[in-house]
Image (cartoon, rainbow, N blue to C red; front, side, top):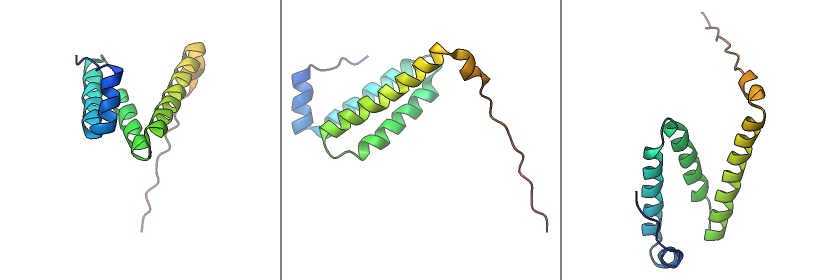
Length: 103
């Protein structure tokens, strides 16, 4: 697995090579997702959602805040499931068949 550069190097990349920093983030995210067992589809969905949200940001601080808020919400949902797993399991989707129009 790729080692994360030190903070100073990341700061330098953010100022001088933002595309290289984005590539590093993408490659490290991909490595992490590929190393996960069984949750790759969900992790890819979360990563894609994060990428879309970050694309709307106009500065590094907004990117950081967006990431923190999104991850906090995900951890909150996970904590809720862990606190009350039966409530989570009791939710079932009702499948409603569509009626075809004839005529």
